[in-house]
Length: 252
Image (cartoon, rainbow, N blue to C red; front, top):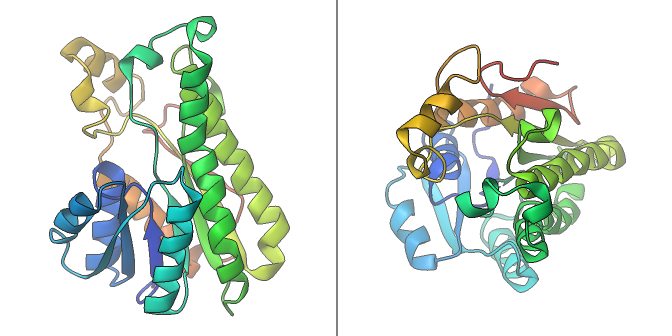
């Protein structure tokens, strides 16, 4: 597997899964990684924790103007974009997650959709014209979750947004496959991050831990390694797939 020298953009990469992925791509695989955060000071600070070629930028995926500036800056600096990982997501909010579907405010639905789904749409629309010029195309990886595949009794707004990412992956794969642009979805189970594990009490953590046959939480690094494999030519004749990274909770 070789993705060395690839120019990679990872949204929401100043913490959790995004940071882990940026670190792996830059340090182990020697990629050129654009590290994105809504706060440029945080982006710069976090980039110093990674040994490798990292380009810290400010990026709010709900703002087209910022997306346009980041794409322009990356092209100006590196000439192309090979991989996009749409990882940015609306912060986990217990007050929304545990509400019944019929009790969730419309604005909460729209706010989550605007980041988790439309953020991925905006970023994909911005990078595809660049990838169309690449001889080797490109790879787009969208981050989703297992409820988008199996359904769940909580977190309706998140499930709807993440379901859209699966559809986005399929459409990109169908429309741009002949241009050698591949797309995948990672549907994640319970991954131990600040946004999830540390926002729960001990009882909630234990319940989540026991949901999968592996009876444990996943680690961000276990998501990052899958993303790296997908970005490589090891998956050159696979596209449109949803890969479940959930300890076996959902099996298809």
